[in-house]
Amino acid sequence: MSKKTEIALHIIAWMIIFSTPLMFTGRDVTFDVRRYIFFSVAPLTLVIVFYLNYFHLIETYFLNDKKKQFVIINTILIIALGFAVHYWMNYCIDLFKPEDFAHSRKAKGSGPILGSWVFSLKDSFNMTLSCVVATTILMAKRLHETENARREAENAKTEAELKNLRAQINPHFLLNTLNNIYALTAFDTPRAQKAIDELSRILRHVLYDNEKGFVSISEEVKFISDYVSLMRIRVAANVDIKFNIHIDEKCQAFVAPMIFISLVENAFKHGISATQDSFIGIDIKADDNKIECHIRNSNFPKPQNDHSGHGIGLTQVGKRLELIYKDKYKWEKWTDNNVYNSKIIIYDTKLRNY
Image 1 (spheres, helix red, strand yellow):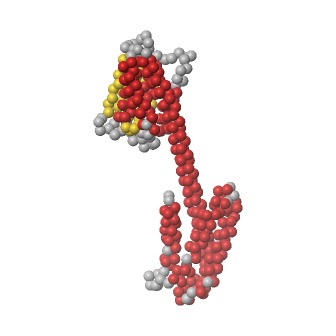
Image 2 (spheres, helix red, strand yellow; image 1 turned 45 degrees about the vertical axis):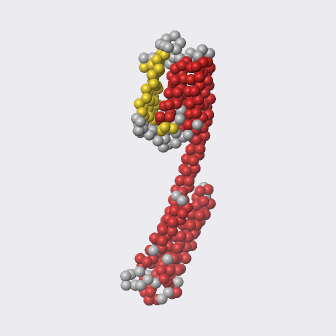
Image 3 (cartoon, helix red, strand yellow; image 1 turned 90 degrees about the vertical axis):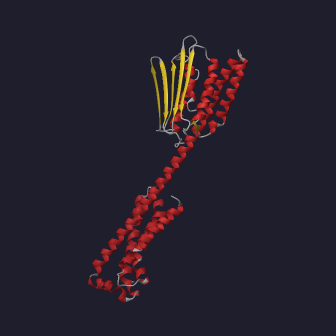
């Protein structure tokens, strides 16, 4: 809530409360300013109690674990104002025209003690209620501010973690790609040149698109396609690679950049054997409701003593999914007949959580 809105709400609330003295005016009685002022004293005490608490007492005592002092000070304040209102109603009435308050004088003469104390108790209750309302509003306001501060801190932390993850992804990915090209230059220069051209497009995506909050699914698929083309040059003939894309031309889905590349890397790292037939299947589907990336590959786990890579890429995928798509994604991993499957389904195609 903005400061102007808060002030406007306060003004409206007090206008409603200060209109209550008008209820004492009958239809046959014309409006009199003095009569209105006389009966406005009681609402004025509510203002005093409310803002003394709102701007000072709650902050100084209630929120600083001095609740006993808070109750004592408010009790003294309410009693003092109650006596002030009692004195005003019983002894200041003569400042006004007698005929304007004939009913008040009659009530005063018929039972002043009982009538006065009933009204005093009513005023005390109203002032107590004003104190409670002030405390409730300020506590709710502080709670809202605390929650906003927590969310801002969480968003800042999330953004910092995402930038850190991106910084880790880029060198990890580039190292693997450069190793592929290095191996290619040893036996086929023209194909190496083609690989360098594909790498330039990959680098453009990594250096520029990766800094965006999101990219279109078509851009991300093109990036993965360039990577797969680069990897095809290196792998042996006994590796069957299939890359299937099912994206409607009118699809406007967006996705976090490089969210799937670690899965593709992992498939090439663990799904290829130098001596046995191997395969890698990549299926990417997208519409305006969800994005699905399903990768299947033959499974050739590394020996336990081989710690190369340390699973950094997949760990980053999990962290990014949780940071960006919290509660709006599903990641399934399973092995079936020595075939490793990894499927990510994203239900936030506009990246509304980012």
